[in-house]
Length: 118
Image (cartoon, rainbow, N blue to C red; front, top):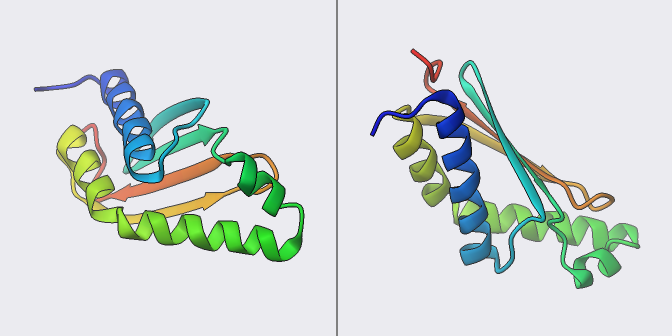
């Protein structure tokens, strides 16, 4: 299927939300995807569980939450890359991610092999 840019963004958003629910066990309260040249930027709000928010009150807890979330993404990285490649028809070159222990926002930046709209 051939998608417009907006359809690609919507489909990526839906699939990443589903991945978070299936793999992490809970999804975001809000999500948005933007395609910019050769990058796909996914922003997810409300990603911390109640326990993670409590743990994040201390510096050691913040580091633990970030490390755990990073490990989970690394374990599921192949599936995330497959989702992006299937929707965009462009190979993922690298994935960068972080989660804010203050706001509960998570950012994914997928760098693709080439501009997506080519």
